[in-house]
Image 1 (cartoon, rainbow, N blue to C red):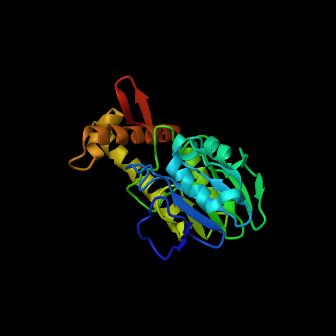
Image 2: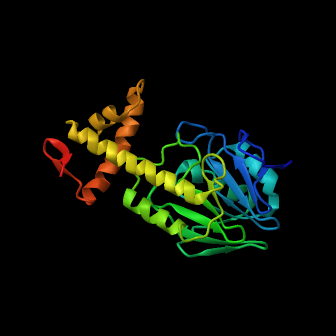
Length: 266
């Protein structure tokens, strides 16, 4: 399969193996959505021996692209989380390649002929979330942790904001050069991306507190007060899920409290 050297944030084309560096290839899965941008990024790390990270949902056309790029050099398959949009194709890829399924734990390593990857628990987006540090390039295959596309929501109903901030703190100690996220383009300035995400989280906290002061009492009422004009019912519901996660964190910080009548400033 022909590989194309990435030179900038041009559209990511499904099924095309794009060289992000001497050791990293990316192939976009066929599952675009508002919460996944173009779709799930599948990463192939290595040259003579390859580990596939996040093979995406089970889709024969996508697997054809992955196998066309890696072939019998694919030795291992793993994922940043158990979400089927990231991990659904693992068994099918193993069946077609004979690769080994990895379920690495925090601190484990994957040693290939040309690379060393260290696994780090990076919970927050979901409870079982992991990131993979490619030591040679200081690139973190970071899953759902961050995205260059600010329209992609980082918070879902299964997120934990306290754990999220702990994961952010871990990345600050890693001397990272790049993030390779599950969705969207490579992030060239990890510190700026983390700072931007934290600022976004903090702004949401402040918006929630303002809505509570104005009389909102439920996540849906808060979401309605915070939503942009023209937001539909589905948008409001998704935002309300995020609001609930923020309320849980604010309650832990004793900034808000939950009463029979609903949420209120403490």
